[in-house]
Length: 136
Image 1 (cartoon, rainbow, N blue to C red):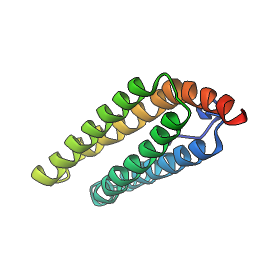
Image 2 (image 1 turned 120 degrees about the vertical axis):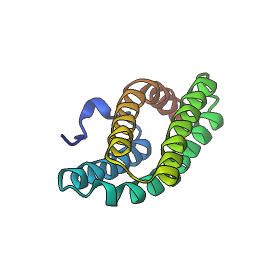
Image 3 (image 1 turned 180 degrees about the horizontal axis):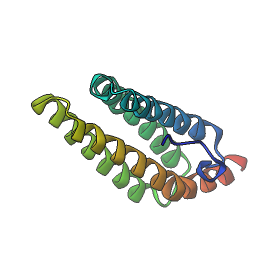
């Protein structure tokens, strides 16, 4: 049940696609650990990576959007902030109550659902705009 990179996930912006591929790779690592009954061991590493990498990735996207005057910047930033809040809440739950399989499953679901819907929607719109602007 891993997530496979397919062309329908491609934004057409190589730098953004490379970052999305890294997120998918890490998500698949956690999925694999769960299949091997090691999800509780892997969730801490995944959350640490996710919190750092998402901040890095979102900042990179937002910097590009700001640089080129992307008209959907505010809406895009709001989606990023909402996801960061979800991840922070899940991370806090793990710290307070420990890693439980339900929280691992919730994290997997939230990460994969959000990533796929965000990439196929908002990120594609942004990438199309940035591609045109970068050519000017």
